[in-house]
Image (cartoon, rainbow, N blue to C red; front, side, top):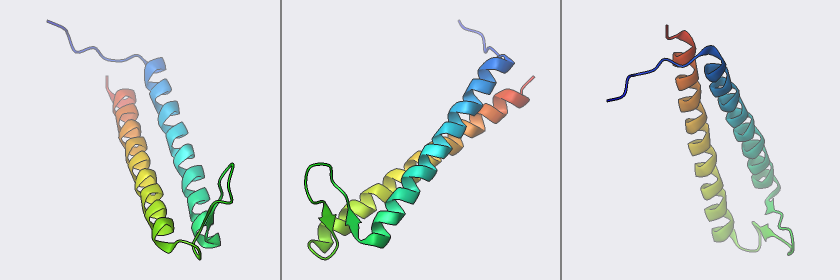
Length: 91
């Protein structure tokens, strides 16, 4: 049987830094996705990209997919932050 171990302060600090990094990634990705939606164009590396005027169904499908991904990563960041805060406040 294993005991419930209480994490030390350094491990809790690392958890907090990891959740802050996830928040930052969510912010950067979400702002980039919103900018692409405002412009009506998702840039591609080796082709001309996806334009709203050319293919609106694919554009809005891709926008929805990116929005859902941003929401899920943001939820994971909140969950990691909750774990970090409970580990910091646990005695």
